[in-house]
Image (cartoon, rainbow, N blue to C red):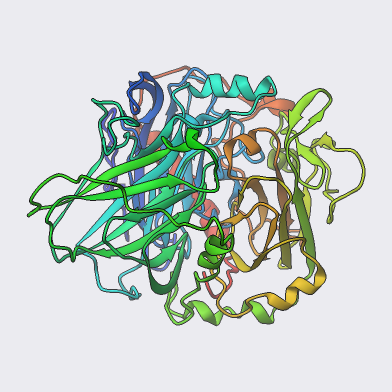
Length: 598
């Protein structure tokens, strides 16, 4: 393996090993290696020093920038004082839920240990992000960009932008994530966030009353007349944020792996866990800098006035600093459908090619027969056994000590049940480890019914789903008459408005156990999640990657785990060769059965 050299400590190493990987694939799909140290660092994003989670000393973490079908190897050293898992939000682990980085599929990485994730971004493009998935850790950081580019042989449905700019927006508390966790454990609501961060920084001082002096803010430097691709991710806790750039149009081009019909917005509501790509042309006269704003939506009261993130768009020929009031947010006090109509307007570009040469629209999802229907209702948190919990269909999920996928692999019975109710029940709420029994190669309809007073967003690992409908009120069978069965966008995270429903369709072609959850961190932490089990009934494992050689073991399987001495960061050649051998072996066993739109 002449293309490999040891990684440098405390640095990201990306290197490509191409056609030398004989036998892996006909094209010799490249490898990209990353060496990460996840650790605490001190920061004061809102002017108050606190503990944040960094990756290689960066907050946000480094970018994973790869291309369709590349193999990604990420060695993660856990330098926190508690267990850690990293998940790849929206990046579909094709036939490989072992690498999903959630409690249903992985044992957490113990303190001082490292674990190497290894997966292929098979037949996928788009803008995503990674983050720590347990213990409310995302509220402290640990997130970063995950970009999957088109292969050169497949055209992108727009001209190559002059630059690629990532913006992470999210509500933020000055309390450490451990303190927020204690509040939830004590049955308290988290209350109003202390502000909104952009790329880990606080707001520009647009208002001397709301924003104290001395806060570091983000500045985006651009050239006049050029067009840039802005990838915007809401990595926050629970607040929907309206994103806008003063005097500039946002030309929407892609969301979570799907090219969209290109249309201009002056602003867009971005819900927790969602990612969007905008093409933005620097077509103003640069009489001054311009505000980039992310402000809280669907909230009431002056106490939310400070929950605003502000960065600066700086032209190279700018004549002065930005000043004056921020650009106005949407005024929908008397029009509650503004945001929903905006969401409905986001359409799939059916003529564009994504990861494959065939157009996205060649996967005619509207002509596929639905084989399963689940209506998932959430309500405001309730007390169960004296604890404040969040539910779906009256069930608050309790993660077992043994990951579900490992329990299946080693035939450990009683870890979970395949009896998640298809419709909301009438009985008292309960805590359980109840999972959806998905039908392999079936087509499932999931309706999210939000009977809470707060907007929610939901995410499904391992899949992109088709957003076919949303409306206010209670969903009924007759609601299907409003479905979009032609160009509903395919994505992995969708909002559900308070007192409303959203319907999605999913092609269950991806074998494994996949997390279906609220992306709102407090709801997720309190139990608003489940898993979909997708098992190939044939007596073969050739449609799923084998259990990795470096699997961690816990719970009922803890005796299988060998000790690992805490050590300094850095991959060594022997461990990487072993990891690569595992990837090669699994890949050669893999039969890919993907829908045409992927």
